[in-house]
Image 1: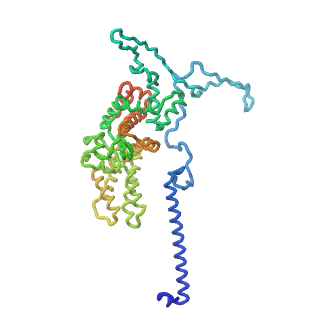
Image 2: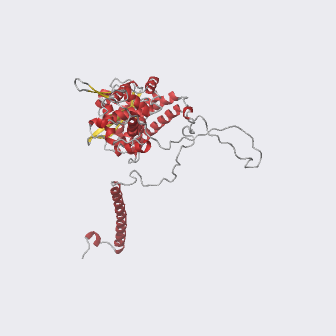
Image 3: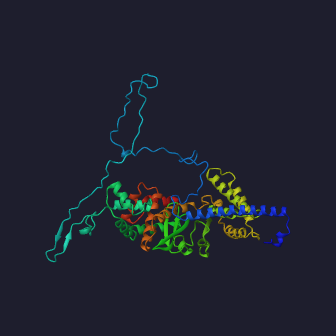
Length: 477
């Protein structure tokens, strides 16, 4: 067998050298193939159900200890119970030792300390009220007439004669819509904690009925309050109604939280809650719905956290001089965030001058010009458009505005959890029920009501939010 012309004329030394080079190439390619095969297997496993699907597969070298970190936030001990809940006669705990356990010295009285232990009763039993309803019959027309009581429904007879009270229903709805307990588990939780038996179907029917009357009316009031806020944080996430794709939107203000479920997320859906003539500031991400011509008159603040992540994604695959544009932008935004945080920590000296300097620096960085890197050109066009409208550093002009959309993202978290443990909404009526109840319950929790359950009971009876939220709304204005 003869060698090919390129090889036939080579000397023995050249052949050995060529074999060694090819051996190195084969070794490198083999290593690369093995790495790619391992990556393929990892991706296959990632697509399957796992115990920790969000794990990154790496251990942190120095994990943080749980609990509050030193200097971060206000630390508080458990407060003493309210005087109304204390017993009439406290339990006396005398000193029984006759001498000091350390040195054997004589003990003398030095005062009294108070301590308490809060505990549940041994068995929580529901309170049952039985009504002995008198029934009369008309001699002329044989019409049956029942006795009436304000706490007895007119149709509470026959198969529905024995019902659970509104406080039970309010507690169940708070567990589901406020705390995220799956509806199928709420009956079991109520049975364990209170001994009350109720079915999932009864809870669903009660929620849908109230969402069309009392809770629905309170929900409309919350929607009407959103345009009165100085700032509205909004974001959206995917949802399903009857198996079809939909969008769940959250509108977060200082005093109310409103959820809305629609088939699409366009400026039309946004303007259902935040009108085009809104005079406050709309804090959003860079979704196209908010850039529509219909919302051109609304002042906006784009979330800097989203912008920083976009810059990081672009910088991850850039090399050389192409990284300069994104790196300088990230630095300017980081300085702006630090300046805003310093302002709210009391370091307000020279804030206006530094804010003006950052505005000028960002204006120069986002000046219109051609860039060779297409990603940089795309960022320049988009961010420059927003900066011309004041949507990037508006929080430096008004420090009361937050530079990120974290409020709306936190408001979406309960809905995201509900989406993971359920099939979202089975139909349009269920979607309206979820939006109304979740909005009312989340707003009650935000306004600092003593009991969210009692607040929801107030809504059941009056179709209005409790006074606590109303006072908070007036204070915010």
